[in-house]
Length: 76
Image (cartoon, rainbow, N blue to C red; front, side, top):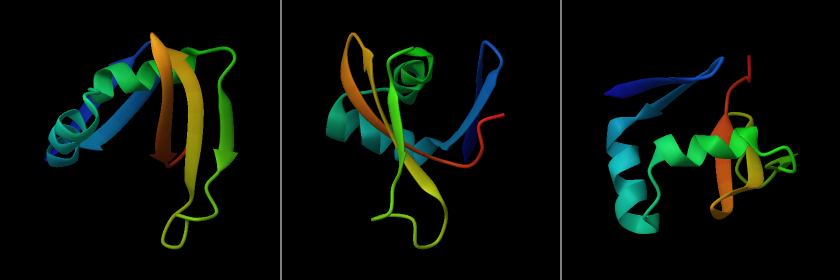
């Protein structure tokens, strides 16, 4: 099941099962990870290694600690 989450003017969608796995594996909730998009010093780059089926991007930013977040889709 997809979870729709809106923060300020950005809409995020993620899979609930993947979200649970992420908490267990990394201890990070997606609701917290999305805050990296608001780090003015974040670094974003195209993920050549994981973009075979869809365009993927990696974002490195700080949300209490340094996070690496991967995203697909457009930022609207």
